[in-house]
Length: 282
Image (cartoon, rainbow, N blue to C red):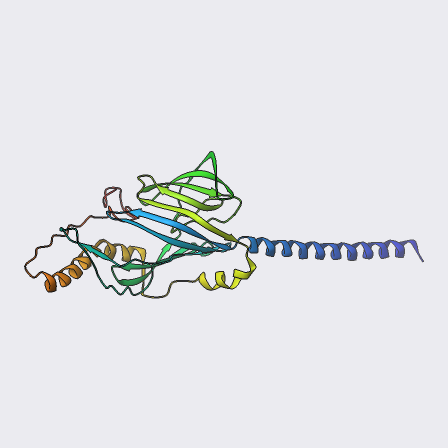
């Protein structure tokens, strides 16, 4: 066999072997990426407290994978009407749908199922960018090491604790954008608090549940956030109509006064397209 032929055969063997190795490497990378994706799916149950004129406690749940999340309340209390004599009656209110928030990092969109009193809307907005400042302060929440961050979102200041041990960019409600799952968040005046009480990650038995529950809200008229905000601002008018309809039957001569609170009792006080004098910051 000629020397040149031997060299050519060795070259062919080298190329063939390299391609095999490359194929194995690519397969290994793909396999690891798959495993990584599995590790980044699960759910969190948060204790939720808010005090927007009336204290309220409940539990909420966040389902997530690498690029999507779905946030909802687990149970909704009846709407209460408190009278001046301290007696309490309950309204039988039929909500059209539950409120929920779907976030997609690939499309850079948030789609919320939101209520104006009892009427449901599907509200789409661009994914807002929260300017978080991360600090070298650490604490444990459950078994996870967490780091402190401060951020401002639509007129409210928040302190968040996130864990890079669960490397997804999600948190409760619309509070996203940190390099790890948010396990606790507190509004600066204590009006809004979310704290994780149960965290489930990479449980193969729950795979179908997670896939089923990460969904785009679909009940209600589809509108943009800019279209929704004026409707929400006038929500007090709808509440007044309900109160008056109930009082007409129980106390025809009674006088009820309902004052609009602006956005003092809203989570979102100021929007990106508004100037800072719009609304009322509380």
